[in-house]
Image (cartoon, rainbow, N blue to C red; front, side):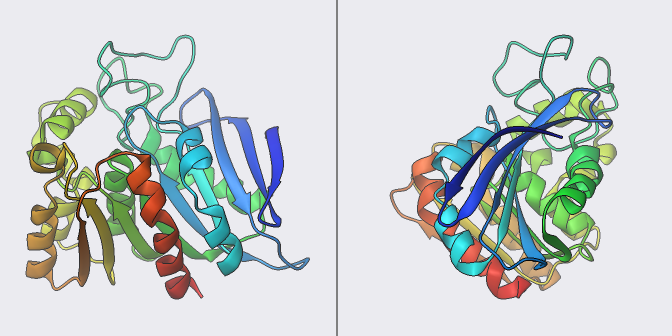
Length: 276
């Protein structure tokens, strides 16, 4: 693991790191904030998955989470959204290819060789974080924004024994029922929509997946609200399954990092209450 940079923040260390991934076959970059702690302490960890076009840097630079993590003793991990680099397949569209991995393991060419973000964030990166940082892997939470909200919800629903808490900011709640999701899942996984269901939060809930509770913030002025995000579908699925959902519609907020940075610290606190 290569240390790209470290800097002191709120008494802790904000670092950026790079390693060669077996899952993607490429170099992958991620950021980790470790708050000040006593020697030997193992801290709970909060995973943050980013949205379309983003890298680890968007939330690291603009998320405003470090003060909350320092106050509550939470390690914050932010991976990239896709493999990148020379030889990695890409697409001219901004919502597909590099920067738009959708947290799936692709099965279609030319994506299947390197677009394995499910394996990367679900298996490989957690093993690296557990070995290199002072984390307690028995206390994990996960959150994310937009495409990353989709990733957070689906990872938690597939792995309820691993994640003690899950939240999302303006998530894509049902890729099977929105243009972004249909494009991405069709391109990465093929035409069989049954193969998409493990990557759709509403479908997972309908198929029996459960979590203890969900927190979702959504801006009412989000231009993607009606066509792409559709939080009412998640509310319906949770109501039918008996999953407690706190869905907070935030007047005047859009989809960008002004919205994310306003509410991300509150999400850190919500996870801290559940992680101990």
